[in-house]
Length: 379
Image 1 (cartoon, one colour):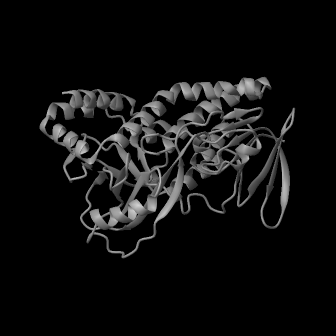
Image 2 (cartoon, one colour):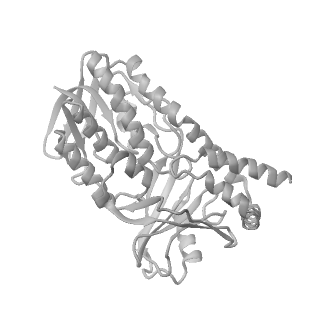
Image 3 (cartoon, one colour):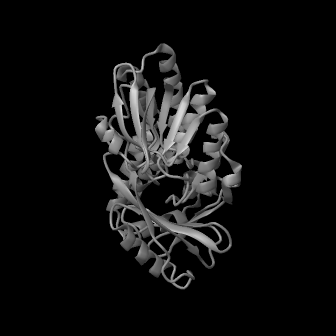
């Protein structure tokens, strides 16, 4: 019998398994895909602070991000250009594979191409049924970690809930002319209440996409035709899309079960990014699991400490992001243009905004922005 079975071999599942094995626990990980990081729909932008804090694989870095240009509906602009590189664009295939390699090196038993079909929670252990097209087997563990990303079928069978809502992320990777730095676009025709992006990978290729509540493919097609007309060499680049958890789940734990990463809705409600929050909550989960396994108490009452800790840590960020998205959805294109003009004319305001910028924590900037917006509208 294993101490822990981790379901999901993405970066959050791999990192969680790696940490637990490093603590001396017997860990087994099952991933339904034959290869991790393949065909992942992700812009792959991760803050430099995440690389420092979690010692993430440098070999996965494609390039650094040193500047962002923001575009209003009528193409007014302002930039954010701090003194140092503040984020990296990564190759998710290399990134995910390297973290899983670290897990193997720590002693994690990794099984690719093996889907977890069913989990049964008993009083003294959990039973996990795994299979592929050719065979099936059952293994036992003291506790299960769900790191299944956007897939919530196992949650439902275990009485756990999914996130309260979902957004659509749509993206192409294609050849683009004249894109020297990351660009962010806002406006009702781009993505109502949200934003679109263009992130260069090298001198030729870029990832271009947007986040929206619905009709993602429609908005991205329009965005590519209107904002990148004549700049994309491929006539019809393939659009990839995925659902993104929007808001934390109500319950991320049960008896002998714990969810982490997007499986728990640990995703930024501002940008839809999930790697930093998932890794952060993974560390919290490992600490609670270590205590619980040593005590021999893996009940809901014990494991709920994990949920309380991660929601205390990130709850304010989730609420701020939801509020900001709600406000953005109510602004007209004309109002957005007026805000851009105001920032252009007030360099001190822009300087104050930049002081509030933290790549992975947005609540201070949102709070400042809402106060500024209130004064702007009333003034």
